[in-house]
Length: 325
Image (tube, rainbow, N blue to C red; front, top):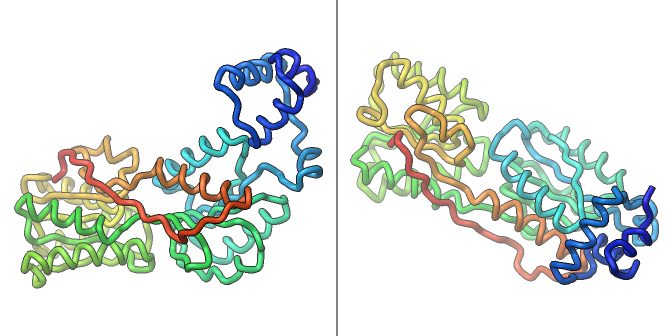
């Protein structure tokens, strides 16, 4: 197995320079960094992170608890987080909480037993965070309800609800159905934006919401079919997540309803399948790359002992215009 000294000799730098680069403690010129990376690849060098962690009390590992790793929105955020961690010499251990508070607690215990340097909580969890106060570990909450004790990165979902609703209203739709799940704060915020916009346009009498029990397309499909069979009238659907919009879209098309000519459909999140529905789904996008990168950058700053003065970073969503509305 290659040694740190051999990497340094091949790259033409000191052992300490290679060590600092691997530990993310020192910035070097791009050409020097490339020589070090090329030497590592050529020699297939694998640093002994266990030995390093014993010396520095740093494992170079971040724990991540995601509420639901089957949700493609979170997959995109996690990809950007992993890329940013890799750039900084870190890796992550991912646990799936399955939208279950008890499973989340068990995931936390498992992560703490692995001597992680910091923790990111990502997802829809509205669960009690009081237990996290005891762990004395840098922590970032991403796209979930938190309190001022924890640094939080979130998207302005009230604004997103307004953007989606006003987009439909400006297209001439007036009887807009909102599909959401009121268990979750993000859905309640998006509904608030929808309701504000409907009231602003003098359409409070047209406010109509479908409250689901899951976050699955299947339930949105089935419940939209029920409404259509009852011949309830609406000329647009605002799916509080893309999965709801996709389910509703399928129900409309299977009922012989033309989209967007008879009923417009808009979603929220801009997951990958939104580009491959027919018609392609107009949606509200969250800045997923910015969310993932910022979560890592703020957490690494905390790990390095830097003071983070602000307690919250609020990002703005934006419209992706396609063919469904």
